[in-house]
Structure formats: structure tokens, C-alpha cells
Length: 125
Image 1 (cartoon, rainbow, N blue to C red):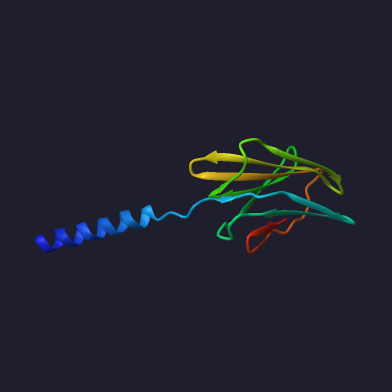
Image 2: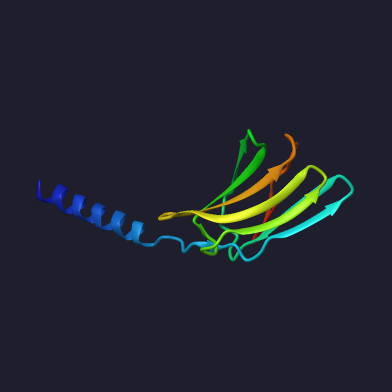
């Protein structure tokens, strides 16, 4: 019985140590927007490459929301007006502080096909 208690205590200590070793949040360093013909490219350089982004497709109005977990951005929302082919603008803001989540919203004129390409410490849409 005593051996089982010791093993349980060691297991609980290992779990608490593992939880204490959290990965520090990444930072959105910039928004880079470029157009080429009918294509619009949004690049997001990050301070680290450990981020696993996801995309939420929203309607009324049409937009793509890139969700960046464990990522910080400036306290103020950043907005880049584009008025390019099919894209009105891009905005970045901290969506939630704890745990940190940043949203990058691409405002569209209409539903548009897209590709999300995480490469190293940059995410490109």
C-alpha cells in the first residue's frame, strides 16, 4: 500500500513539472500583404515556428479568420486596407489574453478559395 502511495506521489510530481514547462507564447511581428494579378498574399512572420494555425470561414460578411493559439499581438488592433482583388483588408488583434490567442481577419468581398501555408516561423495565406 505504501509503495502505491509513493508511486502516486511521484506521478503527481511528474505531471505538475510537465505542466510547469509551458511553451512561451509567440508574437506576431508584422503583417505583410502583397498582390499579384488576382492573387492576394498575406504573410505573418512570427517569433517562433511552434504555432499550429487554423482557419475559420465566416459569412455575412465574408471573411477568413486565422486563429493563432499561444500567440500574442499588440494591445491595439492593426488594420491594413487592401482594396485588392476580392480582399478589402486585413486586421490583427489579440482575441483572448489567457491563454493567448490572436486572430487575423481577412475581410473578403465574396467567398474565395484559399491556402494556408505554415513554413518555419511564417504563416502565409
